[in-house]
Image (cartoon, rainbow, N blue to C red; front, side, top):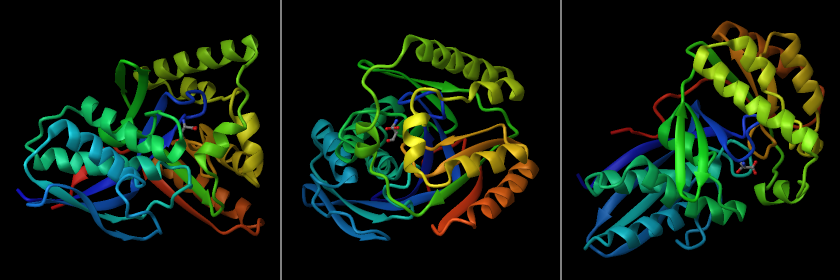
Amino acid sequence: MNEIKLFSPATVANVSCGFDVLGFCLDSVGDEMVIRKTSNKGIKIIKIEGYDLPYEVNKNVAGVSAMAMYKAANPDFGFEIEIYKKIKPGSGVGSSSASAAGSVYGMNVLLGSPYSPLELTAFAIKGEAVASQSEHADNIAPAIYGGFTLVKSLDPLEILQIPTPEDLFAVVIHPQIEIKTSDARKILPKDIPLKNAITQWSNVGSLIHGLHTNDYELISRSLVDVVVEPFRSQLIPGFESIKKAALEHGALSTGISGSGPSVFSLCKSQKTAIKVEKAVRQAYAKYTIPFDIYVSKINMEGIKKLN
Ligand code: HSE
């Protein structure tokens, strides 16, 4: 095999209470990429469509992660990369992670799959760090593994796959403003009150228990963020209106997707998700900011081959 075309999905990081550790994978949005073997050694990005991103390998997240793997594998051939970017950079649904994970996933297949999902995650983190100026894997892990993931630790890297209740659906609204992850990280306090820390780790624990036991009511009560949301929600015009509309129409919870501006709601059943989508769409229409909104199943597969 000399070429692979793949779908690299959008993801929701943090999932309210799990800043930098929790994430889940979306189904309906993602980038497409083509990775091809070349006789010339090295990595080359030959096409980028959709958004204006750097072609220089050391400045492009897909290039940086690809280079990390390339140096480790040291093959006697090279790779060229085409990126068909559908996830808007700075939208809060793992745009940079999709690119960083996509290049290494594709190269791994063309190399005969020598690397495990954990090793792919480690290479992809190097690319993601270029975009957010910090190493975290809460978007990359769900893109690679699918479903819900927990980053148990970065050093040594350990990822846990968390069961996903079958009837869980996400509604994601993306107000068309850009929030850079690096900026959204700078506004966070370095220290948090012990009282908030206790609430937060109790919520992470009970959320994981709720996901294991299909307890939607517990999931709903656990998806509360007292650490990050109070600061970052101020960067998202209409955040409280979105939350109110979603909760009034049956959402289990609503929170900021990654570093925003996208906002996600989790719902039990597709029917409720469709109702929530309609309510949030109506509530946001009164703001002058254009937006996209979609309902997505939780994607259990993660990145996948298209051809
Ligand atoms: N955990 C990261 C953050 C996700 O919220 O800053 C965005 O890359």
